[in-house]
Length: 396
Image (cartoon, rainbow, N blue to C red; front, side, top):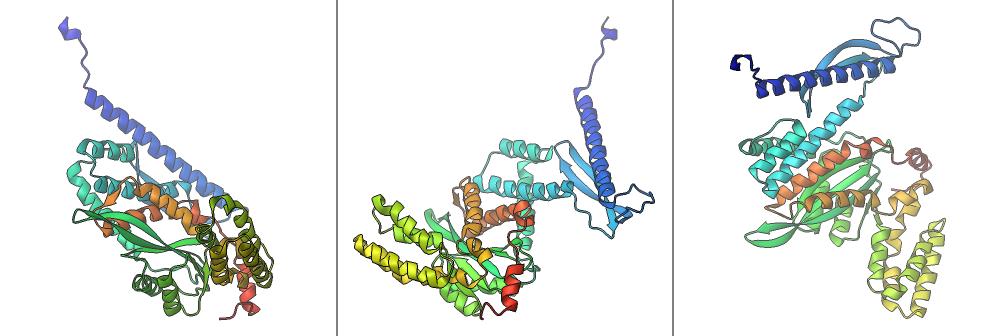
């Protein structure tokens, strides 16, 4: 009787099923690549057609890690047309996301079992804790290479800068470490992350070093630098980019004024300040600002009046540029959104063991964001600026 019992090797069956699924995934993805290529060229392989937009030139292989295992993609090479595939873009984002997750796990000191569970969820196979340090070293090298890459976007007319403060544990004591971040809108109207670097504090020396590093990597053609008011940064702009103008972030300027306004009056004062920047010219904005100062004094808000009077001019630099760009160059919102995303991720770690660890995780997040629509979607039409420059609308 016992001779008739059928015994199954569970591990062999699991392996065969996994290989079957992996093979199916590989076949499906390569089929999708072929379909994308046919759609782009408007012709099947070897097909003669008047509607053909490009020609095949073989293919190259690329490995892709999926939850079903590693698969080999046969990516078509095309002549006369570029081949951009959503599958490859997803691969790039996954690669950046994995690096970021590895660094987070390392810094957060997760357990061995947790490391194995997370890596299995990401890659479809477990990575032992003994391997995690090597993977982190590789991730650090890749991120550092990305951080120091040459800037090849041509000229960068609009640059946005900010400092992010994170906590680090130094000798048993907690202290703040600043990570300086810069993004820009290039000559074609697309946003780029220029770079991030550690600055012990937002002083002139840190900003000068940061700007010189960016300039050394290819940052040129800067017409406007947008940021919060920081004396060290202002002095650094004048030293490293003397040809550029400075725009104080309007939102930060409002907050500075609100700091000396009773809560009961903030809403009313906000309307008054917004009215200044709703004018159609710099001259009109200055006149409105003078009226607001008078009104604030009448409301018995002398400190608020002083702040408006002293700081309004540096918030109006945007008026020297095309009006079509005003809403996007008078605030630091473009970089603030990135900062919120960075803070959301860094909260997972809490206090960093050192400044370099903080910098690496910030860069991992920035690198991930670059791989999304953030960097591929046109942010503004730069023809307006080109026309203004041709007409000598912007001096110096």
